[in-house]
Length: 301
Image 1 (cartoon, rainbow, N blue to C red):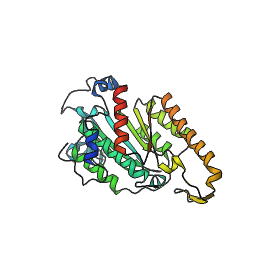
Image 2 (cartoon, helix red, strand yellow; image 1 turned 30 degrees about the vertical axis):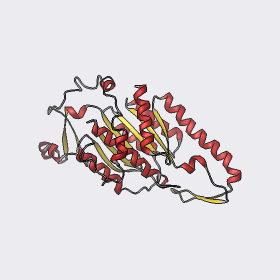
Image 3 (cartoon, rainbow, N blue to C red; image 1 turned 180 degrees about the vertical axis):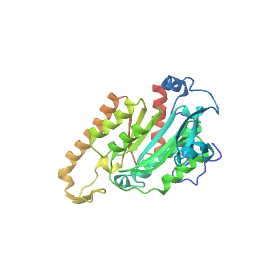
Image 4 (cartoon, rainbow, N blue to C red; image 1 turned 60 degrees about the vertical axis):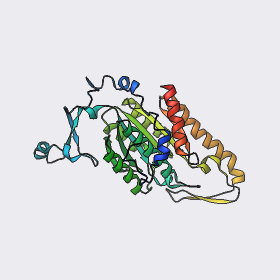
């Protein structure tokens, strides 16, 4: 266990992380093939050779600022080096208002944060670069991929500061990111996917068109899957405020049928697009979910 992983982080438990510490999100035996052709020599080790510029973003090391570029353009740019051009991972974390729902111990957003923190820790532990985009109807915060403990610390603290809110707008956000993320890499989506399914699918396929590998964790509160209600109840849409009074005795069968169809749709279309899809119930311990997925991924690889 790395000495900088401490229990001070809300969403990273070292004891839980230890359960999947020996598993890999990215098998390095296949990384070279996945990235092959991206650069003449994508694996140069710890090289200080200058590769290109990109615009400064929060979380970048200010030591990499190009002061000559600032003098010429009056804009902040950082130098990218060859080791930064290897595989990058971007974690896309949904913080819309619907993610604030909970029936048990944690909200969907909190559960997604536990997964995001664990995955980010795993990537940094493997010395891979990982970044974070937290969004609702707009991007709330963004960190470009890096592989340092300091960078991980900043991302973990950012997740703790953010409160879910705003409408879900997956499709527009994903299309914009697909255009903005220039280097091929791994994209991990953590969301309840409460948006128009066809629009979301189009955006996910946009990522694949850009030759990114994509993993989707579809986050559900347990009650959204089980519908355990048995008395007349009023539901309120967290994002719109719309209210609906429902008698569960008459609504349960149709509700469960539609939820099953919702999940089956994503299972089918993601499989057709070579996207990993995982249904996540907030009552399933996140470390067990992640360990099971990583073990399966390792067998498939």
